[in-house]
Amino acid sequence: MPRLVRPTRLSTVDQLIVGVLVLYLFVFVFELALVMPCGGWEHLEGCDSSSAEAARAAWQGYYDIDPYWGAMPDWYANVMNAQDYVYNPFWALALFMFLTGRQDTPWFRTAMIGVASATMTTSLLVFATQFAHPDVTAFMKIALLQVNGPWVLGPLLFIHRMHRSRVDLA
Image (cartoon, rainbow, N blue to C red; front, side):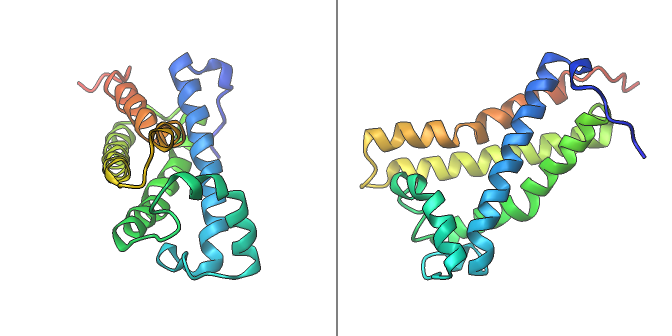
């Protein structure tokens, strides 16, 4: 069984990355609480189970600022499915790798750069469509940047960290 590294032994950047990964996984759990009772993101709009209503109440602030969240068009459901089936499980693996001191393993660095790039790309796509929506006000744009910004800034940090790895590849 791998030994956990004391978080204080990690570099400052790695400690920040661990914090971002914990945030991502926390949000993942809340997303699952919202979507699981409904049977998928594409069924979110018509879902009326009691557990879905409770989760929807917890997400109400986001429903108020994201014009696509409640309606969940097919393209948005596909982005969310990619996030829940690919990106978020990878963040759990990434947290394990950092906490066991294996974050500089070459295969992991490559995977981290790939998943971070995909996360950032899909997040920017969602930002672009949200900002172009005619009903989105300046306040909503600022709120969306504050809430969703970590899904662009986090991957930028991950890519920067993986490119400056201390591993000698020769």
